[in-house]
Image (tube, rainbow, N blue to C red; front, side, top):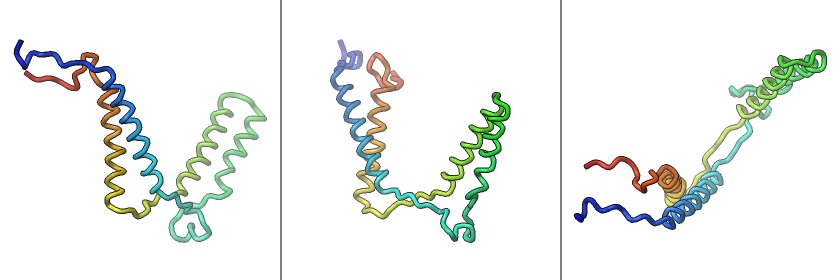
Length: 140
């Protein structure tokens, strides 16, 4: 049998080790990445004057109206109005947050991204492999 027609040897333990190594890399890189992101609330006293979106009490008016509507006439429309008003409050809270990257060294940034995206690559390699063990198309 020639070298080109030989089937690749399957090592089921190798794929399992790659999966757990990729998962560990992804978790470690994700943890380090999230440790360097700071969340800042921009809804302070002067946020309105510098371009921020402040809707402190006004965002609760649709919720109050939908709760009144829910108790007055209990139907699917009143439930949808309550859910939409809660989503409006959540969107308001999220829109008033700002994410900032804290300063780190270039080496730690590279290590973070290698762990994060290398772990993603290993997980994708194991999870999306063909059952025959080949990855991608094989051209002859």
